View 1 (cartoon, rainbow, N blue to C red):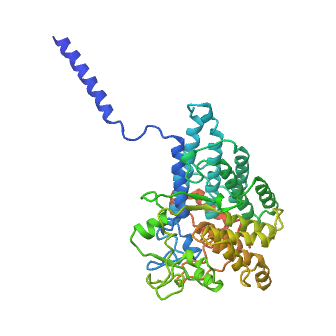
View 2: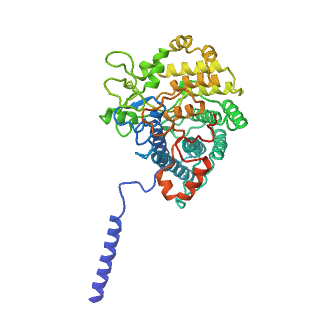
Length: 483
């Protein structure tokens, strides 16, 4: 009898053990995430960070003086530290974008799909991941300077070294070239998991070539030979040729998948931003028809921008146009207008890309007009005015390098609502001239300072990186920003 009781008890204990172990299992979340889902998540995290104007995440629409804060003006006055904005840029791009892309690559590589046709798409999927890797690392280098690269993303190394920014940038161009050569336009890729191009590999290849063009131009003052070969090979590979090629991330009408601008300007119920005086004054001076697509008139009529760095009453200044703040307005990672301005810069630097500086300048303005709902005829009229005509403005410029002023001003107007790239363009071309904020805590920010957490926890590598770039200050120019 005792043996029977012992046996029953053992069975009962084993049964309870199995049940208890079952209680510890998460039956709601998937045990494994498909690589395609990781890719989609990384893509959204990247688009959100590029598009965002939340002062905790991305201040570049303020620094590019497209917008001005109404009440809390710290960020308009170049304060990076109160809200620890550099940490957000760092964490989102490394953790939410690059790490997810890395895991997506690993999962897709290890996956055996159900058909030979699906398996044949893997090289395209991996190449597209690589294109977004390059785009993201380029943003980090353009933002901070030297950054973790060769030792980044290793969860077993929490204190990665920082790599030289120019060395990283050169390596990124090599990686991008390989990805361009890998992409097979006769095959598909992600399909509906891709919220930018819906898996269209031809468009991804154009995007990659256009990114290569932009990266080449950025190196023009520091390594002209590499810049020239990079730009010319990018054009040969095939860059954007119309607004149909634009890299627009698709947003939806329901939160949390709405455009982040909609989150901040509409869903928040707050009135934190108005148009900035710098862009409004230029648009007014040029009688630029894009005013009405960028901003709304004030109740008394006309367009009024807030003084940079000062409190600006919401009711008495222009607001962004409803289209800009709509939930489903696409998030732009790259567009055709920018490509044409980059080609204008390339011809001004005597790179062999075809066309003339004026023809590409005109095409950039026309592309911007059409992308914002205006017509080619509107652009033609605008281009004929003496204050816009390339030859006339070039002759009147007193800048050391006149073409930088002419292209820089119009490129900046066309980059409206694209703060990160506008900020980079301002730093590269030094035009347009930004107003000095009323209570600026630094000079014009040429970079994000390194995150406080890096200074605290990765002190040795942080100190070496800060010394290598010159100093960990906002005013410190990066390796590509020489003039």
